[in-house]
Length: 594
Ligand code: OXD
Ligand code: MN
Image (cartoon, rainbow, N blue to C red):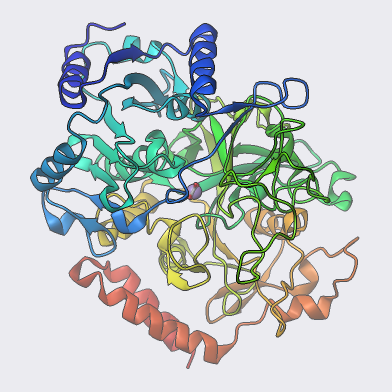
């Protein structure tokens, strides 16, 4: 398939290492896809779903110990420990290669090794970066064919070049004690073993498009961010693009595919989806920042996705999709998850994500309800399935960004929306993001942690340098995006969400766009500019009053004084690498709160 000697050497080296029975080069042809699917069906690795109800769809279960990203087993193996920074785990590259080689030596005996040439970004576009993933999992191959552009054309683009990311994956024995997800930024290498969960093994996604790419972007003058990209079409046909950084499982996919409320659609507003998880950002025309989505599909969280919360996502899953760890109804060969629709399927052929017979309300021996789908169960769907996919999705130059939104899951503290005073303050706002943890990563759920720019688990270098890079990128463009922070998750004393969220988030996007166009003024507060309550359009919103809105537009000084103390402590981690601009911004915040 190629004569590129770097590629051939790489494949040969790991063929010797893993000792597979066969090596198969992936050309992503329909015949090959069909053949691989049939093989995976024969071994039980995947189950074919009903060809009429869910054409081209497959079902898969991961090992029960392997259902989320494992941040404590994820390492940045930079040559110098200092470059990994205080927020990542570090291992010396030589030590890491040795350890991983030892654990995975001969791991593919009796298996096939697949060689996947893939592109992040449209092949041949200025944003595109190429990779080769080696894997012993057909599930990985089939997912990569949805999530990235898998094609032998990658070799044509590469020519003789050595400029590709080497992705090495083996399930080995799925031993969680020997699970390692290692990134070697200076070597362009990712080495992932003992896992079969998407976020750990679809190496184009978090490992490449964020961890390695953030490092590449730092060196090459661009940015790789954990951000959705959406376009808001106004009644006059103009489209404004917004990117949004939110931690995992905080609604990026829902926001990216938002359907505006009737009061907006009637006037002609539309929302277009460019990306739901990752944005690569570069300086472009008109001295603006431009963003592309380097992925080709969605790896979305299933539970809670339904025709009301996100019809565009649900429709995207109706063909060519791989479902992982949801409920299987083996009688109809369809899937179900909590929140998709009531009632759950019944009968003796309904199985939960672990493969056990299941019915809604089933409890364990302690009386706890057993969920049918894992809270981090997923769908992998082609982006072209999405009814709201933007016509600019494939634009090789990306889309111009008018606004950047940061947002976390905060029961208190952060108001519904506020705007930073300028770029520098905006970088500060991103750097102080905090959010309650979710099921997307192994560990405790619901604990507030600092997650700057939603990149805490994904930044491939020192986060102090990352902040500096953000500050520098602002200097490269005159027409900078305005920077905002949102919080859809404020709760009342009973713990209920106050803001209706979902499609109604359009009302906040509308304010953001009107701010970008200079059409509406705002109130200056210690933390930035807040909307006047009457400027958030509540028309047509039932059961929600302006008084409720006011409760989520407040900036409680005592809460923020505590927040400033937490930020001070968090910032000490970065030592000398914390840019002075951010120190100054923290002082301004404290001063404003006096
Ligand atoms: C994801 C994640 O899968 O952030 O997008 O975990
Ligand atoms: Mn994500």
